[in-house]
Length: 246
Image 1 (cartoon, rainbow, N blue to C red):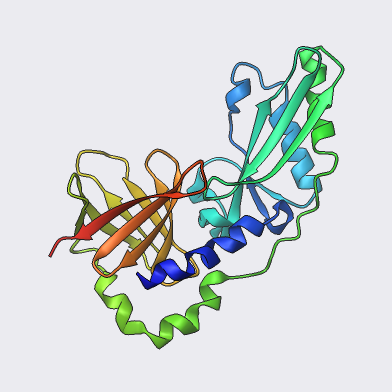
Image 2 (cartoon, one colour):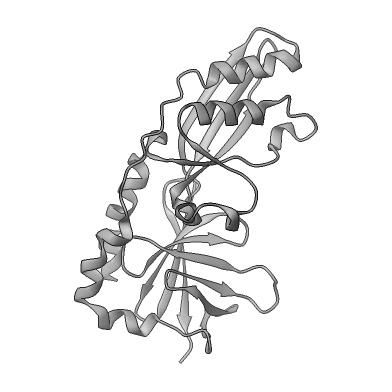
């Protein structure tokens, strides 16, 4: 339970992060509010991001640069239609790997024609987009001395690819499968999609967790227990414990 003591410190950098701290921005091929007609908005967004020295990511994640393979080095962009009856209005939201909104920019246009009004609103929304000045900080390397001091504690939670560990919350049983030294998944035999994907953070045995529904959470070990905490709308965490089978 000692890990709980530093969880607020672990989340502190996430809450204080700003969009200019990031280099990579993922832009989806389709915006939820503009599926039928995107009015050229994604193209404008990418141009604006490139002009401010952000690296725009598209396509499959496995084709992204190595640094961007860690989801927490990437912000996700979404263009939302926030129009009113009198004005075309566009809001651009940028979220981190935990689904937290890092930045939001809104612009409005008096031009009621969608073809010209939406692009005008987007240009106004991004007029004050700050230039990318990414923080040069490798959390894993920063914490390396701590890991070296207590190597024995990491052994109970390590697995080999030849033998998967089983974790259960009393309702479902999941297999842990290592992908590499910094990433593993929990797999449910009844689904082709991983139940959860864990990527090592800067804290020993604490992981960024992406669930099969796309939501982000925090995962960490406490003895034989793997605990997943999902942020809730009221600022708290929903906690589920998965115990390793002996």
